[in-house]
Structures are given as C-alpha cells and as structure tokens.
Image 1 (spheres, rainbow, N blue to C red):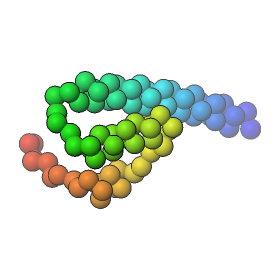
Image 2 (cartoon, helix red, strand yellow):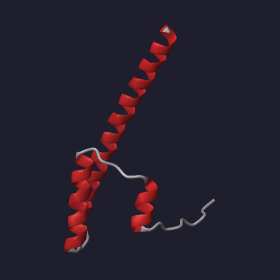
Image 3 (cartoon, rainbow, N blue to C red):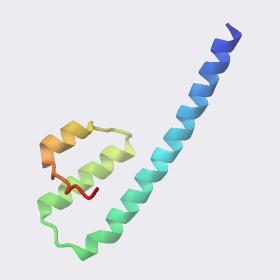
Image 4 (cartoon, rainbow, N blue to C red):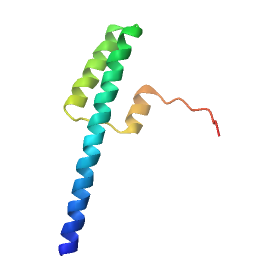
Amino acid sequence: MLTTEINLEKVYAEMKRVRLELKSLEHTLSDLADAMRPLEKMSSKEKKELRTIDKEMAHGECVSLEEVKSSYGAKKRANTA
C-alpha cells in the first residue's frame, strides 16, 4: 500500500510539472502570436477567431489534434529524411 501511495505521489508531481511546462508553452505561443499579428493582415473574422482562442486558452479549454485538423485542414509535410 505504501509503494502505491509513493507511486501516486510521483505521478501527481510529474503531472504538476507537465502542466506548468504546458502553461509556459501556451504563454510563449500566445506572446509569439501577439508579436506576429502586426506583420499580417487579418480579416475581422480571423481576429474574432483569435480572440475566441485566447479566451479558451485562458480558461484551460482544449481540443484534440484531430478536431483542429478537421476544422482547419492538415497540410502534408514533405519527407525530408
């Protein structure tokens, strides 16, 4: 029983660490997007989508990669290997 508790504590600690790293990445990406906005011309629809995405990120909402691909399309990458 004691080893199970120790393992659960380790898993919890790792999850907290991953969450912090994810939050850091989200902030970095958000800052990058903000920095790039003046360089691109965006329609009002695109600006509205970005504001919606920013609000969703602030509330911790997320979507699966498959949902993003189906909504925005997926480009095939060239095989560089």
